[in-house]
Image 1: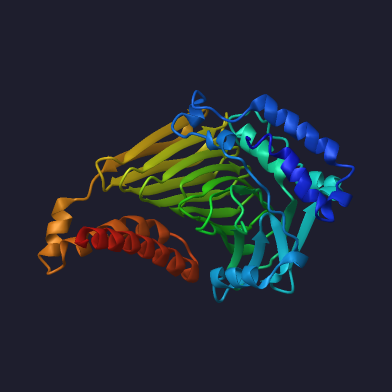
Image 2: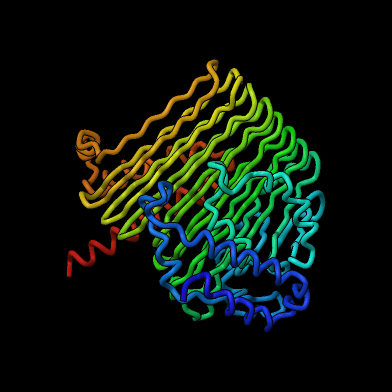
Length: 450
């Protein structure tokens, strides 16, 4: 049973909740989405953007849906959520695509949260009207199948609005939790819409996590509007189980003098696919797009970035770094598109890969589409192994080989994390890298001793 034929299971789950009563008038639209998904089909390897990543699991696994309402939460779920929430943060909790207000902790003034269900489709269409102008066949849209898949199986859209001039004094952690409850092959499709009003500012950690005990999949979508002077620091954290399939699509529209600092932070998932579209729509808009991945065992991580310059006096930098061990694979495809008759545009793109194993593999593909003369656009890609001279230098300072290897490896990724602004988020991300690295190496040491 493929993800497309799982639609009947999805409707059965809805019938067990009060949501189906609200959606009676909208089921026909869902049927249309299903038809469109059948027409597009699951992405195949003969599509260029899917050349190195297989979506075959969407056809092979028998997916189930675990639609939970807030009234159904139990102590186990509450306990699981509390363990994953960071201190000194505001919290917004999403469980299997549904907003749980009682598990969230949010500022009182200036920030509003609205869970838009499909009974209020006109409101949803109004909120997304700027995004829907993107044609599906355009090179600057998401993969059609993943986009439709999210729309088809999304339960509600969580809209987060920062009022004019609001500057959050703490980071906002959005916990995107996949709660399987011992079900096999659960899939969740959360949808988040961020609206940052004029001169507002926020640091947001979008943290996707789930249980290690079962196989599951996530196909999430984030869309953000940054109005004039708005500043957004957004971390997209993938900390799933080693059995999880993770996909996300993120679209950011930047207005005049708005600023985006974005980090893809990937430390755990059997397979992950990240699609990012950034539109620099007005003069003075700037974006810094970053990525770090620590891959081990047979993990596979695919980054697809698309930066579209639509105005003069704009700039965007990309820096993605991957550490690959064992039989892992990293894919990076970065497209930069600069419109006609623009000037004073700066674009830089760099992808660095550190291989710790002879069986790891990295694929990098920069794509530059430049239609103006007065621009600066650079790109680069490197693949290499640990520098033995650096390791020797550290060993000469009475540092063991394993410790030297750890320091050099972690320094390679932490250099990117240091570019983020919020100190609490930086500390959390750096600790996550170290914990995963040491945990895996300690297991290898135990196996070696045995």
